[in-house]
Image (cartoon, rainbow, N blue to C red):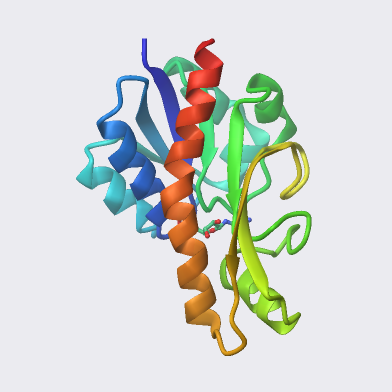
Length: 192
Ligand code: GAR
C-alpha cells in the first residue's frame, strides 16, 4: 500500500510541485490531496495540472470544526506535509497525526523562525544580520511555529554582495532538491 500524503500550502507551491513530480513516479507514496487556506494560491493550479484533488478552507473550518480532520480521515491520509503553509496547525490535528506532520522552513532554525517569519521576511532578516551562511530546515511539527524535531538541515554560502533574489534562489534550490528526498526517507521509515 502506498503512503497517502496530503499537502498544505498557502502560496505559489513550488515545493508542492516538486513533491507532486517526485511522487508521481513513486511506488512508495502518492499525493492524494492539496489543501489551502488561500483561494488564490497558485498551488491550486499546480495540483490541477497533476489531477490531484484540492480543498480550500477558511479559519472557522480549520480552527473551530472537525471538517479538515474528517476529510483527512475519509481519504486515509497517512502523512501531512506543509509546503509553504502559513497558519499554525491546531492541536487537535497534531494529536491525530503524531509524528506525521512535516514542515519546511527557509532558514537554519532555531534562528529566523516563529510567527511572521516566512518567505522573504526570513531572507531579508538573514541578509540584514550579515549572515555568511543560509539554509533550510525540514522538521516535525508541534504546537508552536517552526519548532519540533529536526529531520534535515542544509546550508548554502551567502556572499558579501548577494541580494534578496540571490539568497532566495540558493534557498529554493536547496529546498527543491532536498524536500522530496527527505519526505521519501520519512515515508520509508514509516513503513518499517
Ligand atoms: C518556502 O520557501 C518554504 O520554506 C516557506 O515558504 C516558501 C513557500 O514557497 N515556508 C515558511 O516560511 C514556513 N514558515 P513555495 O510556495 O514556492 O513552495
